Length: 372
Image 1 (cartoon, helix red, strand yellow):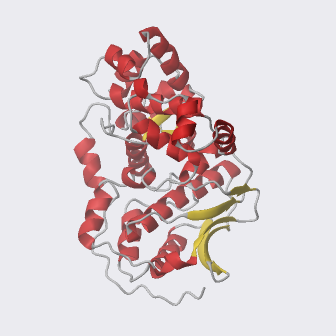
Image 2 (cartoon, helix red, strand yellow; image 1 turned 135 degrees about the horizontal axis):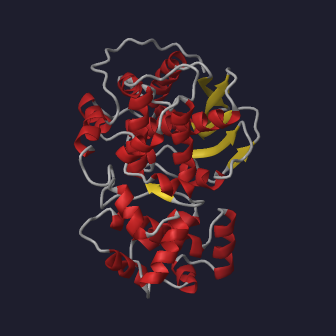
């Protein structure tokens, strides 16, 4: 694709993403958590973000406290944090390092870069022009990873991440993950709908948390590729940019929390299962056979499809209970006993055991530490 567009439009004002929202949330118990928060982030991503602080010689504890994340929770194997908490952590690290890319690139992506990217991509007629501008700016801002937009035949467009620096593997992996979330979030917001990723290839071996990629990117994944590539429909390039300066200001107030999980993969049977779980209280959840009937699938077929997506009905129920537990415990009006009952546990001790498996802490300790 020939990139002939020029930077001609005025950037109205440059602010840090989440700047106003961060000020508004700063004094609230539990950091950025809200009672209505939906969607959570695996601890693997939290750990990678925190490692950026350690590399620069910063103590993670006060930064984690600002985000309402208990340091002890990072020791868990399969714990999660709310999208709001991870968004607050992103902002806190960006402010501490003056780098919105977690110090992953050899050149800092200074605070205000994302807002500049947003405004620059905004003043274009279609997603095609927006992506061309966005790629150009990113390539000016950072050195080790370059972004390219290509056509792959008449029907598919490709965003490529080209590694031109010598980043250590762990930093390169997180850089690719973070850049995709930022860029895809902007793409979807600009046209006010989800841009479906048809397939994704990654220039590294599958990490331990690769299952999370299905929620972020989609089900068609390949690892160990020559380059990291995200393929989507070429027709999406013609989508009209519908946002305005006014909506951009509102968007940036709540970024990055508002796009971290909003545009996740909506396809796949596991997503349909999660929707059904969200639509009813844990005590009213269907049996596996009832679930299969509701989805008009044979139980064996449903089990096989969930396994193909790296999941199971039990895993989805546990994940949703865990997410609800984190949300409910952020509400100071709820007692731990009422949370246990709302989640459908027959005995409080069963809830305590489950919560400790999820987070490595008791509910009471998690609540105390998350409030700082």
